[in-house]
Length: 190
Image 1 (cartoon, rainbow, N blue to C red):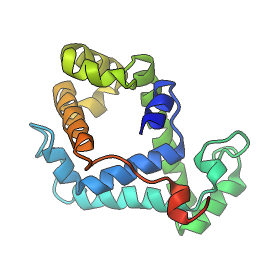
Image 2 (cartoon, rainbow, N blue to C red):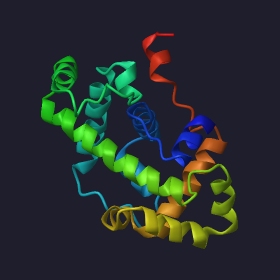
Image 3 (spheres, one colour):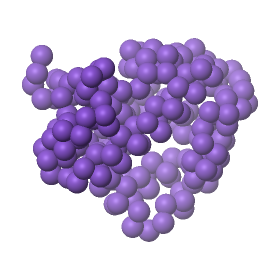
């Protein structure tokens, strides 16, 4: 996923990128399984939240399945939050409420802001992998400056986030975590 890292290093994060990341998360298993990968965060999710979290991710993915390629790629002139007719079409096509589409757009905006901050801090460059191993303290400081403190705390703090990053990197190296197919390929479009 070097192209994704390049875009994220520049602070670009499209709905298609979000789709691929959500797809990767669902491949890792349940949210409690993912949280158990973070030392000290195993009990963070209250009972019953695991299923609700996965359902929310799947609902977001269904909504994005109802979008055009230009909407997924956040092309100019295709902004769902600017054109209500697009928003209603996507809601109808996905069998959801327009408020669910707005919720997805808000989450995307939140992630996009975080990616922009992480890109500016240099955490999204391929050389960031080297920094993860050479200077983990510096990476933790950058994480703390980039992420919403409440979100970081919910994920068990910067140290736990750093451990998760190392674990996910190991999964990718083993061939178990990366390489989500593009949406076009999945739909059979060229």
